[in-house]
Amino acid sequence: MAIITKITRQKNNTERYNIYIEEVYAFAVDESLIIKYQLSKNRVLEDWERDEIVFDDEVRKAFNKALHYLAFRMRSEYEVKKKLLDLEYGEAVVLEAIQKLYNLGFLNDVSFSEAFLETQKRASKKGPRVIQQELRNKGISKSLQEEVLKTYTDEDQTQIAQGLAEKIANQQSSKTPRQVKQKIQDTLLRKGYSYAIISKVIEGIEFETEPDEWEEMIASQGDKIWRKVTLKFTGYDRKNRVKQALYQKGFPSEQIDMYIEKKELEEDE
Image 1 (cartoon, helix red, strand yellow):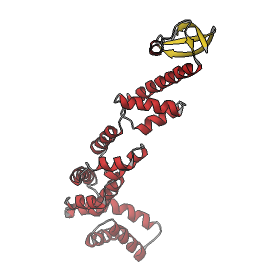
Image 2 (spheres, helix red, strand yellow; image 1 turned 135 degrees about the vertical axis):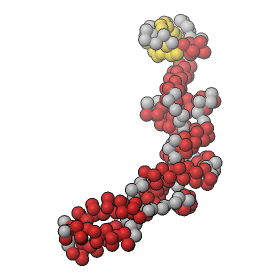
Image 3 (spheres, helix red, strand yellow; image 1 turned 45 degrees about the vertical axis):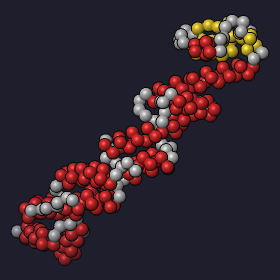
Image 4 (spheres, one colour; image 1 turned 180 degrees about the horizontal axis):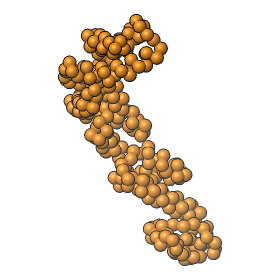
């Protein structure tokens, strides 16, 4: 048991007060706790009551830190809990603060997961596999991950993946159809789409290349290969290695033969 002998307002934070017991500083509390616990000079405090006030004040501080953290964007319970623990609040204080956040509607893993899914779909064009992994990393339960991802239909996935694929195809116009398809597949796999969705998307894109486009492409890519191979090989070996490299990039045999014949004629001149 102790007696409060003085209460003073802090200079740097007028909403907090210093509590003195037997003329010695004991602890500080928010103004709301002064009212809640009816703290005043000559107020007698039991030891358990003092511990309760200090705990309540820690919860309020943790709660306010969490609110500041949530002000920038929505967070999962796991993210908020980790943040508060990193700030060295005790486990019991953190759990109490989180419960208060839930009760007041500032924290909700269902709403967070739904909003996160929409953001990743629309802004980042990600597929369900990557989104599920990111939800897992944010501490969202497996059952909630699966429930939320049910709303990401095959139709939605196809539409978003199609847009990505068409953008890649336009950007890779100087590449062969095989190279473009590989680029699309690699990108969509990285984004988290299934092989079924990727195959469907690629099948929906027309890869038509005119003869003059083949000539331009093979000149651009072939010259680099020709120079590189010529440093080590000549004659049949060079011809065979260049042909193999260009074939792997998706150039037709007739275009490759025409290109090599042209390069050999240039050397003979």
